[in-house]
Image (cartoon, rainbow, N blue to C red; front, side, top):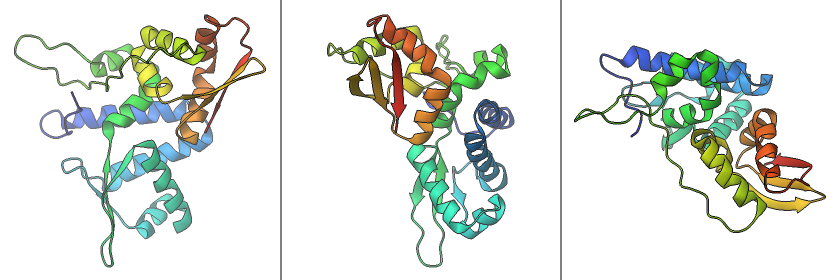
Amino acid sequence: MQLPRPVGREAASRKYDILSALMAFALSQDKHIQRQVLRVMALITTRYNWQRDELTMGQGEIARLWSVDDRTVKREMARLRAQGWLVLKMQGVRGRVSTYGMDLNRMLVDTRPAWPLIGEDFVARLEPAKTVGQGTSNVVALRAVALPIADGTLWSAGQAWLHQDDAATYGAWFHALTDAGVEDNCLTLVAPTRFHATYVAANLKDRLLAALRRFDPSLRDVRVIC
């Protein structure tokens, strides 16, 4: 189940939940990620059309809002598209600016590790819930990730354990990592973006190393690169 558009009677609470998740996540990160998330929140709160899932704003306007130059806007918008937070819906042409959508589900998946910082009531409200009777829950359902394929490598064994231990965190952060091999008792994993690599290295490395050492006690370190 996907996140319903934040419209209607419960629109305000859904919007606050998304912005709260972004805020808590940003405050738990370094200054570079904090600035990136603040820029996203600025776009959402000033120009994003929640009902139509549209952000229609020229580079010059964004540069003025962010107090940066046009090159910074191009670079940051490209990063946000690579992360999956921003989706290009219509390419701009002469006389018309590009139209973007916001993948709110992707944002919630990526900010999931910071939800407990807000409170257990927040986590309970946004976690997937089972259908009761004929009705369905209106809470956010995180995208399901299939069990990793066992191929006999250290990383596949570690993936299986991480998936079993915490499927939500596995799906958000560990699933996209790929094995680049072990050298000098150090496993190298490749993340799809620099943002992803930075977050895993800063916040989840201890959990990652502990899981891998269950299968290879001689492992000294794990390195996450982009």
